[in-house]
Amino acid sequence: MLLVIYLVAITAEAMSGALAAGRRNMDVFGVSVIAFVTALGGGTLRDVVLGHYPVHWTQHPEYVYIVVSAGLITTLIARYLHHIKRLFLLLDAMGLIAFSLIGCNVALEHNYPIVVVIIAGMMTGISGGVIRDVLCNQVPVVFRKELYASVSLAVCVLFLSLRALDVAFELNALVCFAFGLVLRLLAIRFQWHLPIFSYHQRWD
Image (cartoon, rainbow, N blue to C red):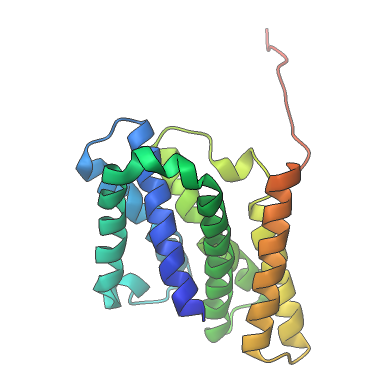
C-alpha cells in the first residue's frame, strides 16, 4: 500500500515543484531540478543524515524518470491545473503522510532512538518542500501556513505509539494514514495554524 501511495506522492510533489518553478519563470532544466528535489529531496536528506546508503532513489532510477517526466508534463498542462487544486491538496497531504511513515520505518530498521525516528519521519515528510521553497526564494510553506509539519509530527508519534502497543504494521499504517489525512484536510478547511510570532521593533 505504501509503495502505491509513495509513487502517487512523488508524482504529485514533482508537479507541485514544477508549478513553483513556473511561478519563478525557470527554464525546463530548472523545472526538472525543482521537481526532483521536491519529490526526492526529503528522502535523500534523511538517508544522508542517517547514513542509510545507498540513497534510496539511486537503486530505483525509475523514480527519477517518474519525477522528471511529471515535472515536464506539468509545463504542458499547467494552464488546466487550477481546476484540480483540491485534488492537488489531497495528493500533497497523502504525500506528506506517506513520506513521514516511510521515514519512520527507515529509521526504525536501523534501530535509532525514538526521537531520531520522529525527526527522520518529519525530515522525509517536509524537507522536499522546504528545499523547493528555498530554491524558489520563498519562505517555506511549512513555516507559515496551515498545520503541515505538525501533521507529520502527529502521524509519527501515533505510528510509534501504536507500534509500541504491538499493532500490526498494515493496520498501524492505515490508521495513521487516515488520521493524518483527516487532520491535514481539516487544517486546510478551517485554516488551523500554530501561534504566529511577529516582531517589528526597530533596533536604533
